Length: 461
Image (cartoon, rainbow, N blue to C red; front, top):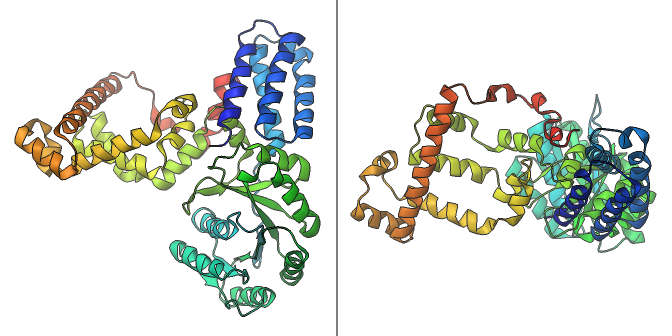
């Protein structure tokens, strides 16, 4: 995952300064040296790093910080704010027209995930923004791109307009727009062709389409795996097309992540969407504040809450929670918990969104943990309804049958039952605490607005 090394290095640098009672120019310089090296190793542009460090030093050595009760925490806040400034102080949304059709032109080099990104953005528009988008397949150079877009469109219930590979991209774009007008669409995304490199033919085709459809947005798809070359690609496209935003893909890959910290500062083109996986739902609006929190290892509670609201079966979860709080916890409840976790995606990725859990997530063997959960789920599913509700009836013969049905050994069935008993005991303790009034009122956390700034108090922000 990106930023893991950067997060670790930055946190180490902060430890060396937050434990000091007094801030001096020497310990400040030692910390800044560590921050500088961590950013350069993360593939952040040298000039961006130079300005970044200079800004921090000026602000950190000011009178207000030097004389504060906790100067170390003040420095962490300054670094956090400077990272936000690099990424953009607020999210940059699609500029939708108040009246008429909003047109979005998707551009980028071949292999950056542009076609998939177009469908993912359409998915966000449908699910989160109440839009009615049309996808127009203008990539007639690569026949597979049209079929790919149609398959993706079908999976999210969004129509794809195409005239096939025999029709020129410009004509497809013009007729696609006319089709959208006739059929009541409010947004059109044009998936244009890419090349392995920037060439005159590609740019002329894109310029012709731009002149014909007058797009409200031109979104450039860039691959996080390309490192600092993101900046060069963004600059080239921006000079020729006046790009309005970036879509950063493959941020879940083996990228060091430095490109995302460089591109905004150099090109002044904002990141509007970020892709964190291959699934159609694994792309979202880019929030600079949240990304800064994650880079500094502070988690991302808002994203975790939103993912839970979108992916979890909240009704089933609430029923299960009520049962547990009343002291009831069966193997059926345990099975429901596993299913809810699976809906949220990667266990490690979910843990990294929880404040203070990032380091634990990076140290755990995620594949082993998820494999154990699969085995436990298979064991429970091999039981009868009666056995799930009352595991005390399980004897050797039943356990043998369950083990065979789940494809595991009897010892694993016993281990799962031991874990269940421990969880059941823990739930009883939680229930007792709740009844005794010792638990916090979680109801106060309902509603997205309650979470604003939730992840920032840990360091005194």
